[in-house]
Length: 322
Image (cartoon, rainbow, N blue to C red):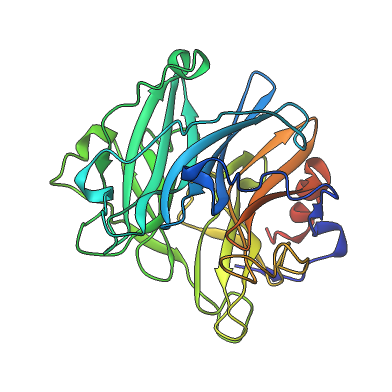
């Protein structure tokens, strides 16, 4: 697997109007922080499923919409998804539904998220029909716990299409990125949990030295699966974003991993907040040949940064060793 230095052309460019989402003090459910937004592109609109946190650090999922990738044209006053199951409830503080990652396959919109009861973060899965989503009928299916309730598991995302007839799922079981394959998502019924194999791990002495996790569902390209991932450095304890490319036919294989980040916390809204020194993405979308990467800044607000998609792919292609 080749490691390549980041050319300046591969750095994400921030929107100068960041942050695009901030907490609303009059909304109790999102008065402390809004961050880590899942992303869905549908009918030329980009829907942001963001994590809203109240003063007790309890999280729900809100919705905002943008037509140009930058400017918010709609933001709902109430959350579209709240904790319903025992494994995501905590009457004493931090908990709820965190860090959603969104994938649409056919007419079903899947949401993988962190279910937190104040003890162990776990992965939960729910879904909604495209029709109900567009009609704003929040008839979500009952959440299913798909990770071992006794083991911390986070950062889970579903590939946008099946791989060799199976659903492909990324998750972080320890400090590494894992992948699992399932023929039917209904197999997760309280008896079966995510497992699979680790495909990428932290790199000692580098910016991604402590732990890594998927940023959002990977994007299918002609060079393979483009995966934006986040990392925590064991040195300065900052969260950054990087890129790796998974083999298009066998995503257990990493065929390229850049050795420098594409985005790191530098600006005031990234260096302050609930968790200073953090840029953390749960999703991205391509609109008019621009790749928009949405990220939580300081665990408090939402920012967006972009790069020309065709330029990115061409640059990465030149680094991949055949």
